[in-house]
Image 1 (tube, rainbow, N blue to C red):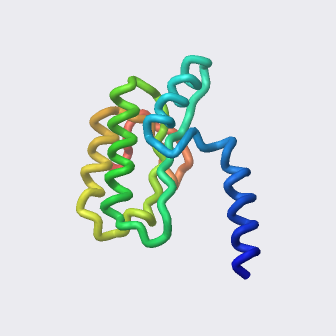
Image 2: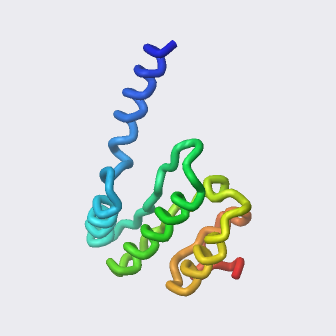
Length: 120
């Protein structure tokens, strides 16, 4: 079974190369900047592992939002609510920052892009 998991992991890593800018947030910002210069949009995502501390995941999301704002990009940040858990005290801060910076927001219920977070 371990051999099968190793094979699946190698295949998944190879498939992901087209979608992953690099292991660091700066890699994602550099690539998003290049895409934007070429007239394309991008989404920055933190891929959390099962069992990651929700506070650490939230910190990664906040860092991505800050980096996108600092670079002046119109990129999206993919925020996965289950990774944050319902008990996370930083959740409201995350939503407030999205609203304050007027970042694009996709309402998962409607799947529509709005100019600011509609849930604030």
